[in-house]
Length: 347
Ligand SMILES: [Zn+2]
Ligand SMILES: [Zn+2]
Image 1 (cartoon, rainbow, N blue to C red):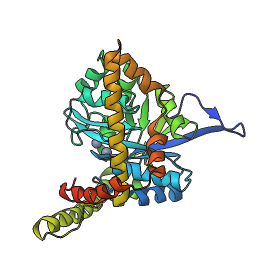
Image 2: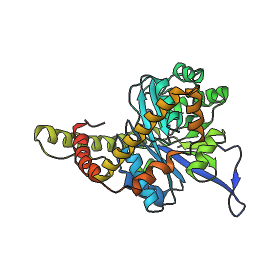
Image 3: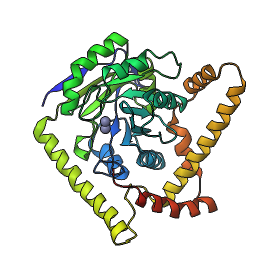
Image 4: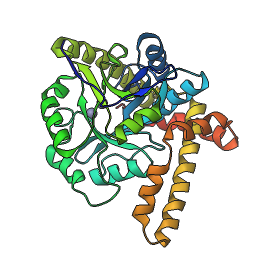
């Protein structure tokens, strides 16, 4: 296995005057999509077996496990800072949104998704650029966003350190295009199993999620990754297949035998209900803001200013989730949530 590395351009000092370089991996898949571990198992593993400071679960088209992981980290006072992310499929390929407040809709125009990530106060990152087999964005799509005149449509970073074979093939080209466009490189594992978490990571000055965010915005990130190689990827794939088989059998039981086994997202039903309540409240507030800004002169510039001045989603939603106690609405939604999950086919 080879190691590729780049260091952050500057670094801050911690309380003892020592330089502190943080490690982040914000592209981890859980059982809620095609990963093999739950949010709880991921957080436990990261705490016990890695020196990562910042993580995010970034499931395909899903955000529930990401919120749950963040909630658990805050509740237990974990040393790990957890952000909320999603790897969403656009009509041009995969996009990674980090520091999100609500689930992104799939199969939208690439520009629409990137604008929505920024409107939520998030970072828009290109995961595994150019990898044809895993729906990586092509150069033309990356350039379309880069050249957009819409102030909400721009890239924050490219994922230049990704341990997969697909990531390895695109690595040199990604570094070239990042230098050309003046975009920072980040590293992530794209892990689908516990033991591969952290195999790709970003290095940044500081140690918190906010430090990570600042480093991306100021272009002071570095990164590193190993390369898995074919044998490792076959082993990862084997674990994924076993997990998918469990999902399909649950789904089949539900439909064929009318068994009441909901799809396992690794999130308790009452937490799912609270998430949905908070998410819909956020979306209502956003709609309200949109309508209000439509009356003023510069709707887009207002949205940009708001997005940039707002602290990341790290606090807001998770804190609301912690404070919230299941009310009548939440209790009635809890049952619904389980039912709805069961109806969605496995990822
Ligand atoms: Zn992907
Ligand atoms: Zn991924």
